[in-house]
Image (tube, rainbow, N blue to C red):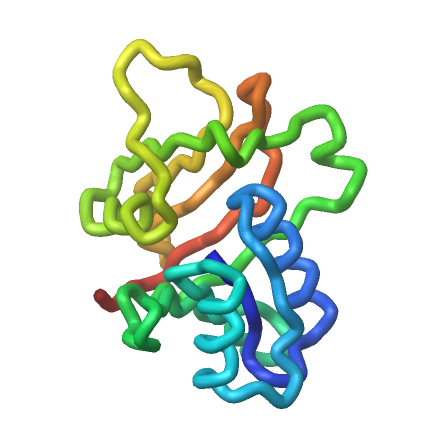
Length: 164
């Protein structure tokens, strides 16, 4: 998957993109003046079928749109994010090639298909996980990442709403 931003992203949005790239084994490109069509072409050149466009509001990541190779939106998430500082996750790293998905929110299971992340099988080790939990309060779901030793590594994605 190729990760990019809306135009002129804030430092916080760029940091979030880099943390997502780290856990999902993807690539990040600085969008600059590229149109979505140019991003689609670049994605194809790099061999990616999916694109995540991170949009922001008031300098903070606020939406993730997952686009297919034709530029159609497969899923759109309204989010707020928690970005770990660089020292907080130094003890745990996600091996993105071994990443598995565990979801308590069936409506968001399609994230695994979009990102090509297999579901966690019963009895599998509880490590290198992307976990989608039901959330309480104003958020509908919470996405967390756990490293090779089962320790939370970040980022945290608080999902306010989604549109297929």
